[in-house]
Image 1 (cartoon, rainbow, N blue to C red):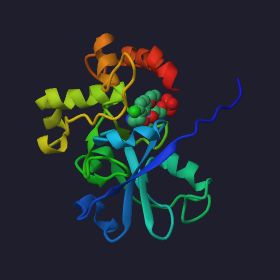
Image 2 (cartoon, protein in one colour):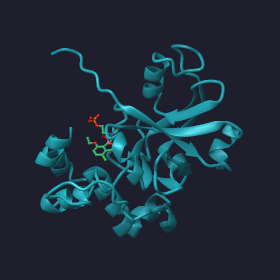
Image 3 (spheres, protein in one colour):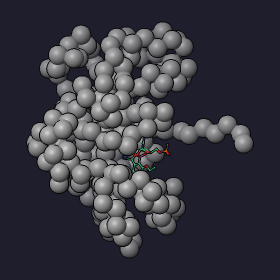
Length: 216
Ligand code: A2H
């Protein structure tokens, strides 16, 4: 089997100052959570950002002004694509866990919502993309069901210190798909009886559903 490559679009979600204490040493810099997506056309519908609570991230210098928060693995990949202050060598200003990022207010390009928040998703893989995901619950079953988990489970919000006002349950309607409507992800979750983000097999099945075969 040959080596495969996956092209992603990187979304720069700017952290809105003032920064919390864990990020204080970054104050005065432009700091972004850098998300990877296969569906840049859905960015209007962003309602939040996802981080892995136990994930290890770093704040890396991309150039003289910009800092990206992402996994070290992603920083190394970017360093070989001209996205590091020191070519081919990531420079990390501080290590951060996903828990340190939960609740950060963000400005994300094209999003109808002017401020969105970083929230916990437990199924993020740290060896894929940047380990940061932008959430579009109208069009992504993973995002829809992870957001439902937070909306419907106060104990889950408590566990990760998520404030109610960070959880935006107003799905932004952006794309109408014949037979699926404006909330295709919700319909797919309902049709496949997906109940939580832990229904991993069914969520994998959702990606193989006709609808997504047509999109990708
Ligand atoms: B997609 P592929 Cl609207 N772990 O973006 C788990 N999932 C990750 C990830 C990680 N570390 N990094 C990125 N992803 C998600 C938008 C979207 C996405 C929509 C619909 C479907 C969809 C909004 N979230 O993905 O396996 C990101 O979510 C369906 C697979 O590397 C990214 O695109 O091809 C996609 O998975 C990358 O998955």
